[in-house]
Every structure is written in structure tokens, then in C-alpha cells.
Length: 284
Ligand code: PRT
Ligand code: ZN
Image 1 (cartoon, rainbow, N blue to C red):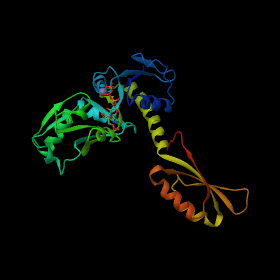
Image 2: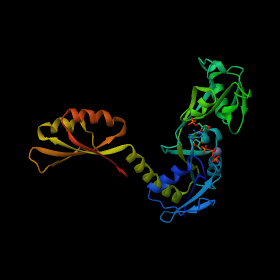
Image 3: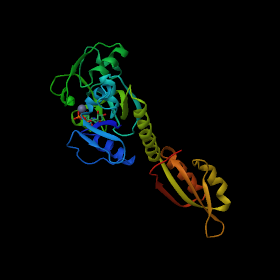
């Protein structure tokens, strides 16, 4: 019995999807040019597909699970379940208009022509706002539509914003925040579910490790109490005596979000020789 996973064949999610599997200790034999590949040390088969097709293949049990963008999952409306956000492929689906125009709210779109590759999500957005507008579905290069007079506005994926800028457009409103997610078929059997749980356990350990850093520092003993109070740690920080009298080495784990703030406070409290080390896996 193997678990069949669908990942993007080529494109923005391909490398990160393979990298995540690798970080989970899963070795995929090369052969990206093939449709299918196998893991040598985990009961996993990898199918390389177009991102847009992945929800359909997972719904139809051609693949048991898949890595694809939330934008694709919600646009395609297939019967699949989102199991886990994967932390890469981050972008947003936004309405954009010509740079010199003013957008106060979605009322701007009333009676306008909107070009997009996401007709389902745009229609849903317009319905929520109670706005009548014309949707022009196009499959690529949506950002050139206003320039050639095909549309008054667009709705497309944005990450850095440079594509919009280069086409004389500006982002007006975000309708969806998206990232790569793991989706699963709704009818997995017991063995498939067990394999998925094993994979998920590893994915979560990798994700958690990425959001945390291991920190080591030296502290004068009279400042230890204050320094320890600044550190969360997994349980509590580790404190070891240094070879020099009156000093200790303190080890702990810090979350990325509060990292800089705590480092500043540690320095102010007298911590020295602060080392910050990436964590590879984190199991709590
Ligand atoms: O062949 P296949 O169908 O598999 O690939 P594709 O061309 O449809 O998809 P691809 O590889 O471009 O994107 C795959 C997934 O990556 C998307 O479904 C999103 O979930 C995610 N993603 C993240 C993005 C972006 N960021 C992104 N910036 N997908 C597309 N873009 C495009 C956007 O459409 C626009 O043209 O990049 C341009 C904007 O980028 P910025 O940086 O200029 O703002
Ligand atoms: Zn695609």
C-alpha cells in the first residue's frame, strides 16, 4: 500500500513541494520529466501534475493527497479537504485598477468589466458586496487587459506587486490570502489515513522548526533570574555553569515573531555572546 501525492510538475510550487518532502526525510528518485516517481524510503508515490488539475485528481482518487495553492482549491470547488497550510507559495488574490484612478470601495466595480482567471472567487466576492459587474475570464497575462482596453479592472494573484506596477496598475482590494496547502481525498481508508498522519507529523515538525530558533548565550550569575524570565523555552531554559566562575550558559528556543524584541531585552539585561542557531526538526 502506498500513499499517492500530487505535486506541481513545474512552476512556483514545484521546488518547495519537493524540498518539504526532502525535509521530511523522504527521498524521491529523480525523474521529474516523468509523470510519476517513487520514494525510496517511504511508501509514497509522487505524481507531477499542473496545479489547476490537482484538486480534481485528488477528488477522483487518482491521487490520495496533493500540494497546491489555496487559490486553486477554492476556485475549483472540488470535494477535497484542506488538511494543513504548508507555509510557502504565499500570495494574495487582489482586485487591481489603473494607477491614476481612485478606489474607495468595491462600489468602484459597479458596471465595470473585470478580467480574471478566477471567475468563481470574483463572482463570490461581487455577490457578497452586492455588486453587478461583468467578468471576463482569461487564462493568462491578465495584467495587460486594462492596457489593451479589454477590461476596467483585473483580479489576479499578487506577491511582490511588481507585475501590477509594470503594467500601470495598483492593488485596490485583496479578496483572498493564499498559500500552498495539503489537500486530501475524502474517502481515504485506514492505512492511507495512517500514512497521511505519519507524513503530517513530519510536516508539522519541519514547519515548527522553521518558526523557531535555538539560542545560546552567556549570562553573569547575578543577572540569571532576569534573563531567564525573558526566555520562554519549550519547558524552561537550560542553564549550565561556564568554566569561568560567576557565569552561566543559557539555552532556549525562541519564536521568530518575538525574536528581535527578546534579543534586545536580553542584551540590555547583560547577556553576552548570543548565538542563534536554526532548528532542523522540532517535536513537542
Ligand atoms: O503549469 P501550471 O498550471 O502548474 O502552473 P501555473 O502557471 O498555473 O502556476 P504558477 O507556477 O505560476 O503558480 C502556481 C501557484 O503558485 C499559484 O496557484 C499560487 O498558489 C502560487 N503563487 C504564489 C503564485 C504567485 N505567488 C504569483 N505571484 N502564482 C502566480 N503568481 C503570478 C501572478 O499570476 C502574476 O502574474 O505572478 C505574477 C505577480 O507576481 P508579482 O511578484 O509581480 O506580484
Ligand atoms: Zn496552473
